[in-house]
Structures are given as C-alpha cells and as structure tokens.
Length: 101
Image (cartoon, rainbow, N blue to C red):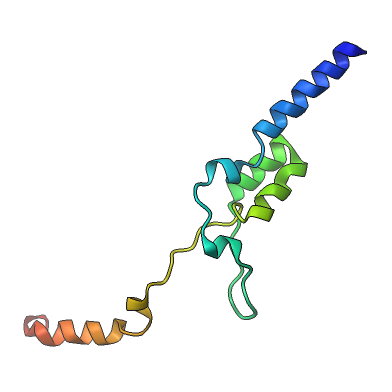
C-alpha cells in the first residue's frame, strides 16, 4: 500500500512539473493573449501543439494555460505608423522617387 502511494505521488509530481506546456515553453505572454476579444473582433487562435501536449501529459492542468492566456498564439502588435499614416507615407515615397512610374 505504501509503495502504491509513493508511486502515485511520483506520477502526480512528474505530471504537474511537465504540464502547462504553453505556460512553460510559450515565452512571454502578450497583452493580446491575455485580453478577451470584444464583439466583432476575431477570436484568438489556440496553439494546437501546446494544447495536445497538455492533454496528453495531464489534462486537468490545461486550465492553467487558458487562465494565463499562454495557450493562445501571440498576435503582432499594430503600430501607429500602419494604422493612420501608412497610405500617406506610401504616397510620399512614390512622389519622392519618380523613377518607379
């Protein structure tokens, strides 16, 4: 009985130490990963490899990756240069270099 209990504890400790693959191996969690999308915004994409690894190693701890947002793929941050001034900047480059016509 004591040997079975020790084996069970070893399995639980090993499973928890290797769980939450996206949290451990996914790198820094961005603000876009933490924030739930608003209405009309596209849904966040899930890291399928990390999800499958979590399920295979120890399924109950998938919750950790979803709670931290690490399970979601990071999105590239939009800079202010591309949102408002991108077209104007492109036009300036085209007018400054007439050989592109």
